[in-house]
Image (cartoon, rainbow, N blue to C red):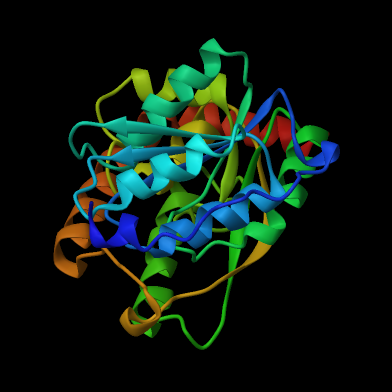
Length: 272
């Protein structure tokens, strides 16, 4: 037994109020080598919502067995284990394809590392229920724990995402705490081979906006944990910025092709 799973305390999920569960809205957590912090993330998510699915994306850090133990004691938690790492987007696609078969219509995605505000899960689900045609995007509210290079760098991606959608209102393109309508997200992802890794979050909002899914922005706090606090980051500055640059190059070319249609849509919207 691995160290992480051996030291996992007994897990007894708290009762989840009826209003925080749904037959249409699913909470999905893609997870790749998150360290023990994932257990706190999943516990906090289960306090707020049912069902919760964790898609283990080829993790090798020993957390898979710990998550399976949690799920064995909790009917509101499901753990899906992928044999090898395919990337965040690939894990999300795998989960939502199974969710669609079971009749779920919306999915809230959140990271496994504890950065996202689990206490806001019911609020995001409620906004989605009121606006089922929309994608509900978290607008990160940073505290002093946020690395300044990450805060400054995301402004560039946000500017490009808004240009590529003709300023339809994407508040933040990178924050992964958001609710998607499942059917259009599956269509967008199946229609091309990109957005399977770190590029998933920004490319998803751009392509969903192109597909006519409006954004609704909701402020949400984000917390960055230091390594000594159990924080794990898979962000590689050079590698991931090259990936984002290539992604925005592709998206800008797609934007130019779609520009007449997007401009017409914006014009019609402004007249309403």
